[in-house]
Image (cartoon, helix red, strand yellow):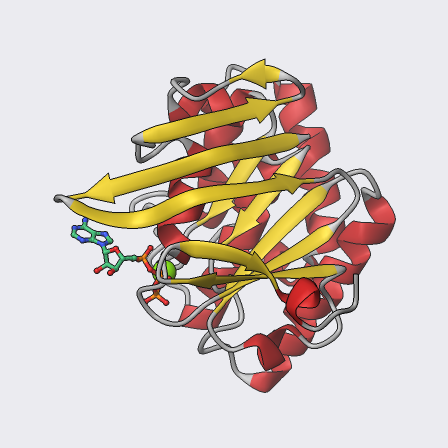
Length: 225
Ligand SMILES: Nc1ncnc2c1ncn2[C@@H]1O[C@H](COP(=O)(O)OP(=O)(O)OP(=O)(O)O)[C@@H](O)[C@H]1O
Ligand SMILES: [Mg+2]
């Protein structure tokens, strides 16, 4: 679905991603594991179109999207939950969830339908809907950010360190949501970054390691493939 071909990115003169070569495939949950500063957030932001790549190409369903801006990528069905969550504080949680779809100009019926599905995947969001985006705890904010990513991300969902700092009960609920998502949307590709791979439990089908901007296939090193 999404091919990343030899993508490099420099920020402020420093090479942050080096010749990344991989494919995000439909129907898989892919983990990208790397230490602090390895480039995980940068990789997701480049895929989302929020940071330009300085070299290489991105292909979505065979189309070159390298220079496409972020809003067009959400139109392709790519959703993103940033590690800092960012809910708009003056909007309710429901408005925050609907916003990406409103921006895309989707019909009310389609947005209602997506919200309904999202609430099946993340049922904890139901009671949060009328609350202000600023009234959530850190863990609740992560659930809301997952919900918002699912509203736009019908093909590919990018989750940046979702388990980091989550209390155990919420981490269990989050993992359950990802399992439910897999049952409800078997063709979806979910990419999850984490610095501590044990937080991901047995969720990933495949794990890539990012080290100082270079991506390697963890299972290659282990000789599993
Ligand atoms: N706006 C920026 N200006 C300068 N350097 C940056 C900027 N954004 C990222 N970097 C550098 O790029 C590298 C990768 O950062 P990135 O945030 O992608 O890593 P990360 O793997 O997400 O780290 P963390 O686990 O801390 O979230 C780091 O060395 C960081 O200092
Ligand atoms: Mg990061």
